[in-house]
Length: 114
Image (cartoon, rainbow, N blue to C red; front, top):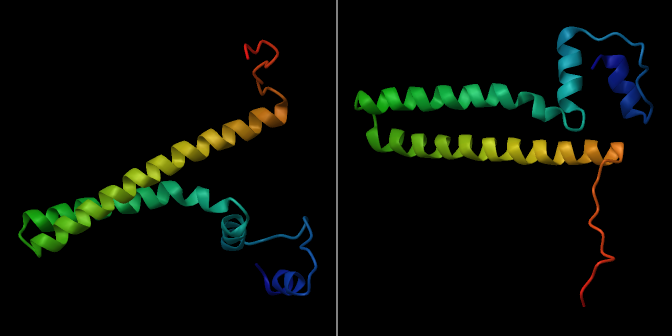
């Protein structure tokens, strides 16, 4: 955010929609907005994959083998949990978008047997 925008937010005001941001300011604004961190998931995935490859190469070249083994295990677990988070987030995002459109199917409880 620019100094002007930051001061407006600090004083309890809002930032005007027509105000222009530089590329880095708009990226930071997008990331810091609610739900903006999801945009970083592909970048995080590439960084963790690079970590796994780097640790695997270090493990193969006999550099701190036990440490590299632990790092490979932890980073693989992080990749799996990131994939799980993405899948659950897409389910929730799909559910809220379909409920906003009114496409939610509610089970009819009039055919009860008790």
